[in-house]
Length: 318
Length: 219
Image (cartoon, rainbow over all chains, first blue to last red; front, side, top):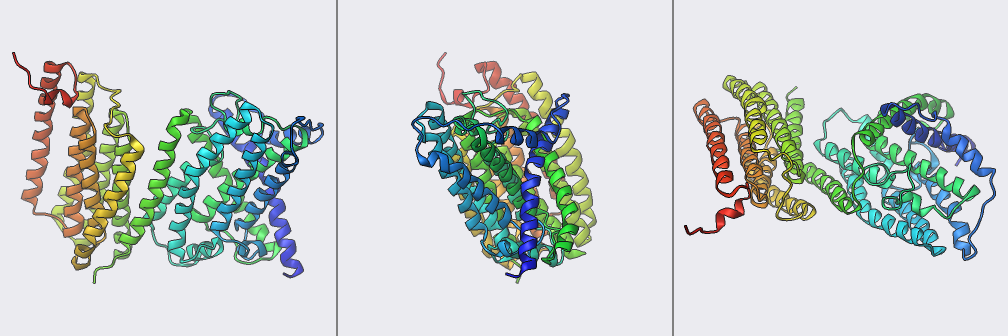
């Protein structure tokens, strides 16, 4: 790895770090506008993070070292995940480092640790949140893998970098299978990021919460790290969506200048993605937790059908 | 240009499959009617593209007929039926929806495998769509089996007919005009008769649940 590559990677990672709270703020603000409220402004997540970092962190007396260690690990996982996804350029050193399957593994690692940390203190809410998180996770993960496999089939590689290059540099073809995959991906996106039909990120209502129940015991800088990590997760998932379904505009060179060119297009796509999420969240109601399996079965099914249609429609008349 | 058109037909085919699954997962009758109308629109568009590719003029008429009949007329009749029968919140399925979805996947795999050798022999513009059309037929069939109320069953029947028309146009580049007119008329008459039936069933049993029909009544 040369110095310039290192700098580009640093730049791209810094961009994801800074954009992540902004993306969250944008979605919250849009939702507020759609509901005829004024909203807190798109910079609110930064203010929250600043406030939390300046507060003392309180630990439960029964907390083990795992509880203290988990926020750093989860934050690291999410940062690494958003660095692996080739958001700005395909020629970054970390974009080659891992493929789509490793990426899903990284999300799984973060999920396991957040659940363990939630159960660690031994409160009822933490255990409840952990159970629900694993419940959603084990249904969403295979569906996400199937979506990634559909794109991998088209690109003949599980590397996200190759997927982007195949999509952008071959002649334009309509892939019906990608439409299925895109629908499935939106469902998985909503479930994995604790968005409205599955979980409501803005309430502490004990009957429904998943994500909030997990991090209920955390405070101060640990809570800030976890909030930032969930914003990074949102960004990482949006980036995966962009890479799989709208890869046009991602640079193939690794210089900082080409990254700067790719940045406005990336931000524009994120803005549009945010609008889509906010619309879905406004128009749908929170599901009962027992409807979640149905929701995610549909996601899994769509992804599988996407793969099958790719295989079937690939048949040429002989 | 033909390359793009074929891709478009494939796209419509997948969209039809998507709608078939959406129908399977749907609990509200009124949404079923909307999905049915969307299905009709997809079939009409696909027929139009096939007509354009194969330069068959009568397919344009067929597309127009599909559009009028299946996007406007039949959904309108169905909506009126729903209103008059007052069954807007009909939500019952015999098997729960996730397992229905999984059975659906099995059906899709089955029909894809079944259609694969046939599509290899086919000389039409888009041989791959035959498997999808077959899958749609089977899925609609399953919907008819797994719904306990009369109206979803009728919609399942209608969507099966949609899938058959799509199979005919895309896999064999269209049927003769007379046959298509006949089918369209059959469907229209069918829906009137079924509508009358539904009123009769409700009159007799004060419910649209078909399982009442299984019991013999002695009077």
